[in-house]
Figure 1 (cartoon, one colour):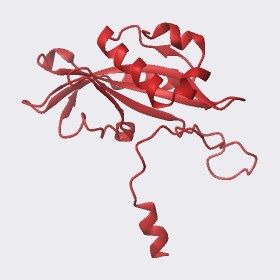
Figure 2 (figure 1 turned 180 degrees about the horizontal axis):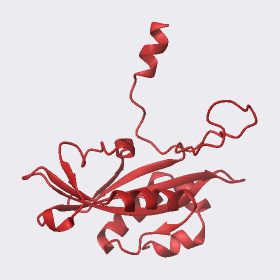
Figure 3 (figure 1 turned 90 degrees about the vertical axis):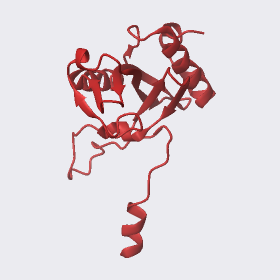
Length: 174
């Protein structure tokens, strides 16, 4: 029993979740018909440091860039905030294998000097939902951040990028 408890406390790896549970597999038990978030991963785009990385902590507003700040729904109250994007990337499995199904970017602005950050929770929830439904919502992102995202998705798993719909490849820079 204690071995099982210890294994449950281990941190999850920092990778895309490729498979999702089917909560409607016919067992009729707890969770039937509920939405599974196991096939969505948050990618943090940091144009300040020219980096992109998966941070599963963002699922609960605990990503590296979100820690130790108070969120404010008014962007004007964080005028010197650094721009970051949490991009909700949904992975589905097709006949050929996993591919990027949905991608939607949500802005956050973080000012560590005042320990405040702007984040629109309704936007994040909406973008997460749209990503799970296979939408691509990135047109509001700046060019540098779009390039970081595109390079990350292409390089992370080139085979997933190749299997992804042409629409995604067209909305991201080459």
